[in-house]
Amino acid sequence: MSFAQPGILEPRPDCSRYLFFALRPEAATQTLRARLERLADGDRLVVGLGSSLVEHLGGTIEPLRPFPAQSHRGIDIPSTPFALWCWLRGEDRGELLHRGRMIERQLNEDLSLELAIEGFRFGPGLDLTGDGEDLENPEGEEAVLAAITHLPERLAGSSFVAVQQWQHDLDSFDALSDRAPEAPDEPAAPRAPAPKQEDFAPERLMLRRSQPWIEGRRAGLVFIAFGQSLDAFEARLRCLIGLEDHLPASLFRYSRPLSGSYYWCPPLHQGRLDLSALDP
Ligand code: HEM
Image (cartoon, rainbow, N blue to C red; front, side, top):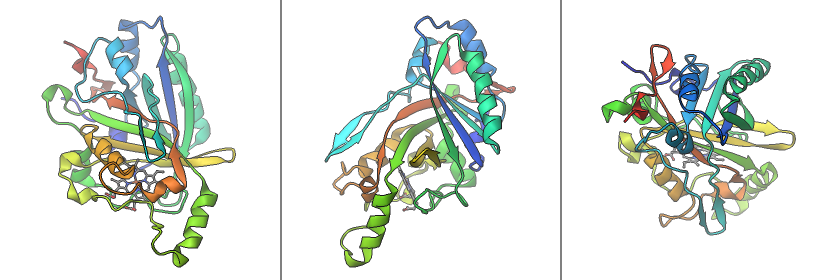
């Protein structure tokens, strides 16, 4: 029996380190597959395979696809695919750095580390604007229903994740908040008047596990949403950018996505990543 990677359903950790890898041209298949299977370590690491890696390993994972780049009303949503995403979870930045270096070393023959982002918990789980990103997030059984695939059986225990690095312009956010009382027709809330989570059936829900990031003077949110498929995320993104007859969310007045990618998070079987869904 295979189970979902536990870190997906756990609360957000104090510290996160997100590693994004690309396939090397000469990458192997069988040894790489065996190395990936051994990466799993319980709840301190969540692993996601991108389309290119799934294809390289000879498999087809139906709901996985490349992240769709989009452009609408001056808003650019970039697609920046990677072969592998590792989400290291813990309490200590130094420990995460060293654990990440070990993973990098284990995979180095076949995969090159292209990007590393450090995330962290701000207060009880806030975005850097001070808003509670955890609001209206499914919990308990509902979180499992939202994030974990049950059917088809070969994918049971899998999850599909959308990852976007957003960069905030916090001065613009402050200016918006200051201006709001004199300009009531300019929405100060970060959302457009779009459907809410509860308007969707469970398979249309998503489990958000976003965390803030800081690098020098730059800062923002690593938006992370797990789903039974990627459809819920895509539907919400269309609402957010105004493709469903709504205005783009006022979020875009102070933040923009720098990246966007999708991954398949395979289940665990006897302490190893279960990649059997790649078999014909
Ligand atoms: C910088 C990026 C983002 C920030 C700062 C942000 C912030 C927030 C905050 C503060 C909430 C909770 C309160 C509220 O409903 O207003 C929220 C809820 C939510 N967000 Fe975001 N968000 C971001 C991006 C996204 C993206 C890219 C998606 C999906 C495509 C998304 C989907 C949702 C959903 C589904 C909810 C639950 C409430 C609802 O159904 O409206 N968010 N977000």
